[in-house]
Length: 359
Image (tube, rainbow, N blue to C red; front, side, top):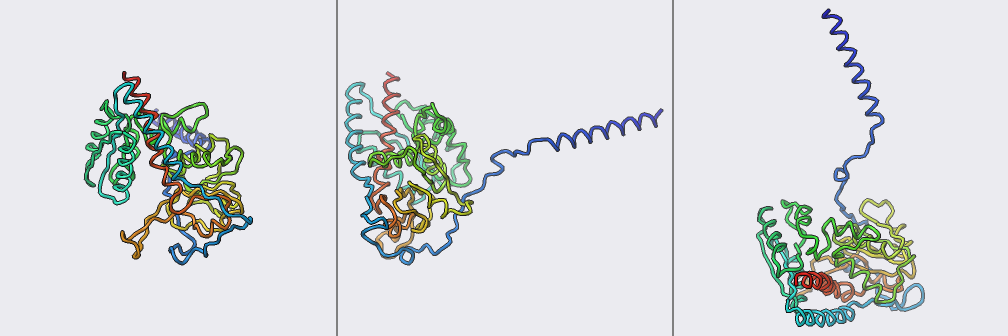
């Protein structure tokens, strides 16, 4: 009797393993997306020192004309004046002042500089700035409390958590904790998802991406139907820029650190947008004649000849690009000039809605 029972158990075990093997053979081999994520670490294939890499500046490009400069400063000044007038009207009609809350963690020099620029831009147009500064070693709970206080404060209509955060903090968790209706950076999953889907409208569009498209549109650059290559896929710049340009009906290709032939891909671009954070990474031979170049990069490099001991250098080797491009953002003075002022514009849109709805 025991032998028969043991034999029956062995038969069941064999049948179970056989069934499991068949199931495993046909199971979808699709791992969780987070398990395949890798950091984009760009490795330049050439010397990227400032003085030695770029060829001499030429006045005309390879298509026989002077490259048009996509100036950002006049656009920024125009938008700035418009925002100030709109906010003045908002205060006069409902008696409320729009407010922006910014949280800064740690003492990164670049982050402190960006926060200063945002605060200055807000005060210039009449937005009330609120700041919270936390130490580098603050806990996640302390940061979440600061975000929560801004989310719940009726005087604050837009919230920015300055990135990047120290490595011990869960950046994705913090971003998701910001109220989507106050997420002026546009990084909340709800806003990014709405940006990616046709027929949806995000509460906010990331300011870097919006600045890029605004710069093109105001310079009468046609986007629809063009081949656009976005170099870089960061959540702050490259990724939302690809999504936004696609919403404008361009054919968008993304080049990233794992792209095997980036030069061949970029040579097919009618419009090239760069956001990779490597100085002089993109060279003249990466570009086709007549391309339009928007450089979103801003890289701090040592410069003993500067009073600050450093200076900002962009991703695209400007001296080489200008002899290939039909239009290009200048260095300095292009993309960056309207970047933070456009941020105020986004704040204004949301502040008007939220303040009117709140009575």
